[in-house]
Length: 202
Image (cartoon, rainbow, N blue to C red):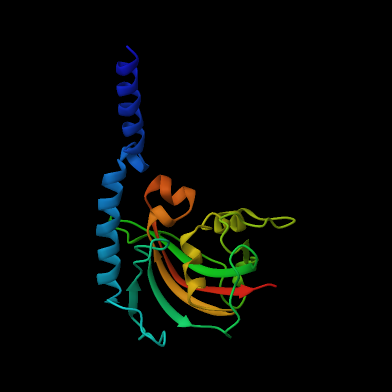
């Protein structure tokens, strides 16, 4: 009886792993959709995917590298500016982040949503603040609905550029949903950060 119960428990756990995301899709289906969506983005933007990181981090305008390390596997990165050389310290540095980001998928509309706290007026928003290595946002004393939406992009993946750039560094990223926010993981949304700037606050 106990053995039968254990088998049922394992089957139930397997069902949870392959359980549904958006529109009842399984994890496997979301991965397939993401692959198609990423290919579509690469083709529509005419991106060139390099096999190796340029030694001087000097990218042409449409070039990206697909990362292969365990921490940031399958994230695509384009380094715009390496910053001033001051590097963030994992677990210690406070980072202020501004970005323009799109969630994209495979339907007839390329982008599901586009949000930004970047630019001259930054839509009246504040930067997203976090400690390098943490996926928790440091809350503001007061916030707006739009700021809350921006904070919903906070993820492990959006920190990938800090491995390569310092203070005032700027990157572009394509982040798969498994490295995205909890919202993106649940719904199978990959995110294209069209531009992302890091400032080290301390």
